[in-house]
Length: 86
Image (cartoon, rainbow, N blue to C red; front, side, top):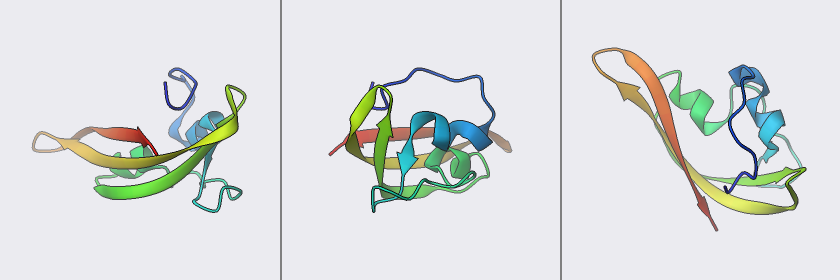
């Protein structure tokens, strides 16, 4: 709901562009591989980071805090991200 868009079948490299994820300056797109979920999928835990979301469904944009973590069961099984509207 916060991102304004549902799931995508696109590969991780397009997620930031698809969802309209921007760095805290609000103008610099988060590069491929830099979104919290993508980082979690590489095994990295991501503490709270600020993200600006602006896309066709959120043209005015919304500020969020995101936290992400890898899902492990002896080996990397996936990742999870939590967005909070700020």
